[in-house]
Image 1 (cartoon, rainbow, N blue to C red):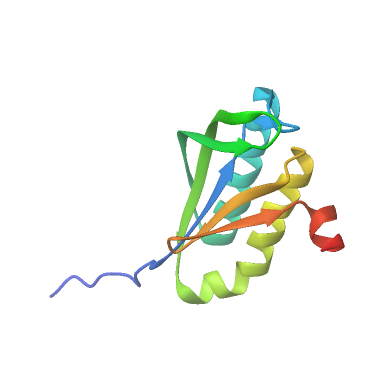
Image 2 (cartoon, rainbow, N blue to C red; image 1 turned 90 degrees about the horizontal axis):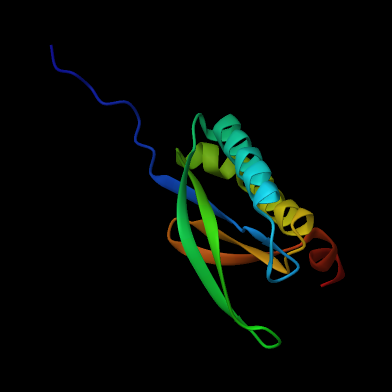
Length: 125
């Protein structure tokens, strides 16, 4: 009897959780809280999630190079599960940007990166 593989999880979603608020103010407590929030949400949507630490950077016109420790929280999914949860994932990233006083949060879907604006900024756009 041949062993069969389960359906492949070919879709991947990653949310980059910052460790700063208001551009460059370290906020490790919020980072830990929101890493757990994103882990919980993605695990609930897709059956599991993983967080990996990384260092992210960008250039602010006011503050110059802003470098921070981040957590990349990711999950794999079937195409059907990704489609069913796409709006919720985008809303999660937008809420994260709002809660951490970020202009935007990075959301990666299948290797494509999107900057998701905070809820208030997205509504005004």
